[in-house]
Image (cartoon, rainbow, N blue to C red; front, side):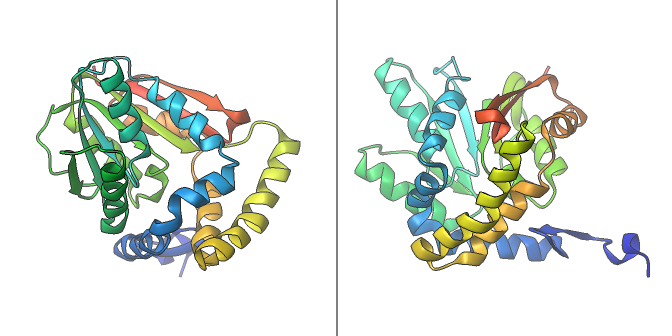
Length: 254
């Protein structure tokens, strides 16, 4: 049997080929297991730099009198930044925190209560099949989540569908390091150090092996830009962060 036929109906879970449905189940297991220590691990792995990336990402939303869908919201980092900034500026921001993982949303709710952010909307749903009408949102945000979606092209089409005309798509994701020497160091760190940190902090080395593998497999900046264009978006561009370790992709529904 050829490689093409043997992999029919398959997708990557890290470097392994699995069924689409199986990937969703495996992703669920990964994030449920690391949810309690998710924020701590983000700080440890990135030396806190992820906070700067997220701050820059949120600055891409100038209109805080808007309706935002935050997909793969996780523990709420993006949503809470936007809510706090809107309150500081006296704006009326409406936002829905959505994630496919119950444990991550549970963590987000706890953080919101601790920060006195009450009355927020949390919806557990699949990025490939969003339970919202067409033309609903001014902004669609997704940070470090789209690479975990089995069918990224479908998730992008769903993003396009639920955005209002002139609505803005924003995606923050790990990307490809530009400098070859830095890339060698980054790859060593990702595949050899991060899983060990994951083992020490979460007792789950495999979850962070998957993280490194999923980052390695994610399309480069230009390839992902083409995927966004193929979903129907216009004015598609990206902004590299920290030498391309991460990138902000933006586009409009026109």
